[in-house]
Structure formats: C-alpha cells, structure tokens
Length: 138
Length: 223
Image 1 (spheres, chains in turn green, yellow):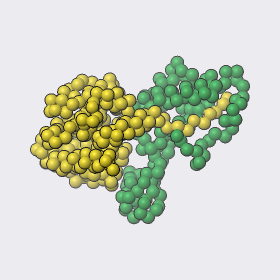
Image 2: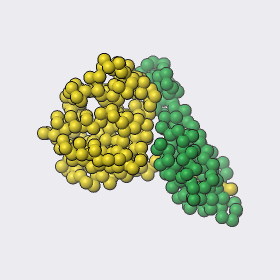
Image 3: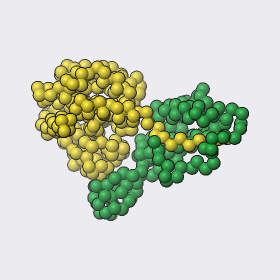
C-alpha cells in the first residue's frame, strides 16, 4: 500500500504548484501511470481521498491515464508491447537485449483549479495543456 | 477554471535524494546493494552468512528496514555487521530520506560494502530508488515458481536474483528450474545465484561477486 505515500507526494506537489499558479482550489489532477509502475490506480484513487482531506485539493478528481508497457529490441530494432507472454524478451528475434521504453511512468501531468476571484488566468499557461510527445517530464 | 501543466515525476524528490546518496557512496567508493524480497525469503540469514565469509577481509555495514522491531538489526550486529535499524512504522518500503538519515551513523571511509535490507514486500520497494548501485531480489524456493510472473516489476527492476533455500528442493515446493526460468522470462538480464544459506550452497559465488564489486568500485575511484 505505498499508494498512500504516493498520494501524499502528489498532494505536496499539487500544493506547491497551486501556490505558484495562484489557484485557490484544485478541482482536477492528471497523472500518468505506467502498467509496470507498481501503482494500482484503484488503490491510488482510494488513498487520494484521504491525502487531499483538508487541503486545497479536497474533493478534486484524480484523472489517471494508464500507459501500456513497451520495449525496443536492441538487436532487431523492433518495438513491442511488454506482455506477460514474453516480458522483456523480443518476440521477433528472442533477443534479451531490449530497452524498456514505456510502462514505468509515475508522473504528475497537470492540475486544474479555480483562481480566488474566478478570473481567467493571465500567465499564458492555459489553453491546450494536453501533454505532447515533446513534453519532457522533469 | 485554470489548467496548469506540471509535468513532473511524482517521486522526483525521492529520486533526487537517492542521486545524492549514490554520489556520496561513489565518493567514498562504497558499493551499495538493496536487498528486496517477500518476508521470510532469507535476506537476513544471507547477510549473516555473508558476514562470516567476508568480515575478515572487508568492512561491512547494513541498514535494516522493518515495519517494527529491531530483531533483524540485532542479528546483524551480532555477526559483526554494524547495522542501523530503521522502523517504518507500518510503511511498506524504505525511501531515500530514511537511508540518508541512517547513513549519518556510518563512517563511510571505513566501510567497504553497504547492504540495505528492505522491508519484506515484493511490490512497493521496487518503486523507490534508495541510491543503491545494485538491486538484488531474493526468491526463496518455497514461495513458488510463479512469483516472478505475478510480481514482475520487482524482477524487472533488479539486476541480481538470489534463488534462496535451494536445499528445499524435494519438499514439493516450487522447482528451481521453473523459478529461474520465470524470473529470466521477466528479466532476461538478471544475474542469478542459487543459494542455500543453511547448507552453504552457492555462498562462495555470492561472496566472490561481492568482493568483485568492492574491487571494481575502488578501482573506479582511483581512475
């Protein structure tokens, strides 16, 4: 049940970001979770309720985007989904020399909230904030 | 309504502390192994036997993680491994902050090799970088050969597998070949040791591997 400590970390980052961005209340939090991250989305959601109690994210919705695991074979160059059938062994050429590309994410992507006076934000960071391929998680 | 892009790793704070720890250990040329497994797979017993094999030639140290009690810490201290016991008080894993705090109790210039014995748990510890150099997962034969397939992240995130309690072959428990095959299926790059701490099987290979880690780390520091 490390989901509780993960939920607490999320709330800490959210509080920092909300303060920086002038949000009085946070209504939604988007996270990206890889299938191999050992985080169970249902458990995280459950813990999230407790972790946000009495914070400015109380009642916020946790939006979880799950990321399927994917690896690339360094021998034949093919990318393949990491499944229980073969995990990190390349299904095309059986090489064990592979690199996991996706599936271990545990990233906080964005938060959504209200400014104190309900004003539109003025820092130019609104609009389409859907993460794009070029966006690097720090 | 306002949406703010954040784009940060949730465990970034932990990862940064872990990186600090790794740099500190590198500076003192102390290789560090993070031992993880289910409860009862034999982590502490393996360390007790390791102490017998290595304590004449190397200075060992350990950080012992448990939910409660100092029982394991006492066991390791008793065999001559200076050990700091960390109790997580219900927490299912160690995190980098706990290790950073515990490290203040050691003189790293007088330490050759550091073990972290994680909380017995085949899931959560694999998510938390502790600043170790090598992640070791133990799988004891009686746990069953299916465990690597059921808990793949732990095996994916480790580079060494110790198949422990191999003397229990024949007790109608998991078979050795299948345990090994399943672990290698999840992570074909695992370096595997087959060990029986009670009978001594495989301990020499394990000790040789540890000695080589120390030599390599010290050489890396000189270069």
